[in-house]
Image 1 (tube, helix red, strand yellow):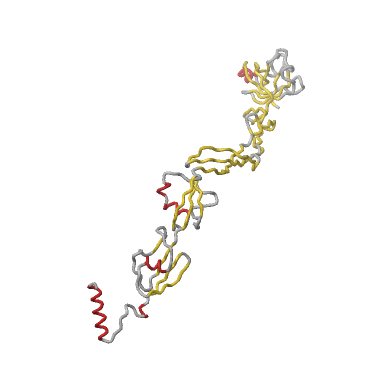
Image 2: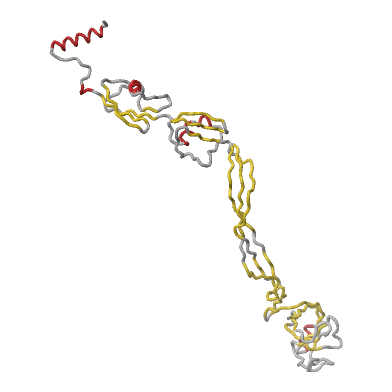
Length: 328
């Protein structure tokens, strides 16, 4: 008998002499330990302390190194302990079609991939469309990872509106008026993009659909020539370069009545009717608005004679080459 046994025997003898009983644990010293395995929970009653590893063996609970345990295996259980066992899930990770079995206690796809980041840190991978990093893990689940991603992308392009120009005599030449603002159209473009390792390697257009037709702008452009005079702006049909002289009703060969029967006063112009028809309204820079109402024997071709009320005014005009405006 070893020294330890001899000591125990002595203690037992002393207890017997004192009328006591020998028992390592009385009925009141039993241990109650709660065991939680996954979603299962039960209480185990022990007559004596054991290690967590021994407790699992006694309860016939399979435990692998991949499972998660809240106590060390050599921990001696105490009354009231709660032993939590989180069984590892068997997950298949397939990367570009190459499968690999892993065991994990992670709860989500993202947690698992974070735990395995060292294995995939140099790889760019994509999850399938029906799975995200928040997807809960299930036993015997397969996670398909791919280095290639093909996705549909929808973009919108503007259809530029056209501008339609229309000529109008209502406006002066060089001026414009917006009749219709118009608006740009919109086309929906669906493309298929391919990414390899995070890099876009190709794009193919699948469809193109007009969402909104463009509305053309309409702008009117003036075709009528305008000339500014001291008494206002006037429309004109054309211009003529002429030699202009001045005359009065007092000049030799002239009288107070014009060829058309009107008074020979300032504002009357003698013209060659084959060049400027009688009755034509003109604007003569430096002279003003005038009317072709007279003729003269010396007035032929591009010659006009401007009627004045005084000889001095006619002399002051003299003889000038001017551009006259044939008014509308």
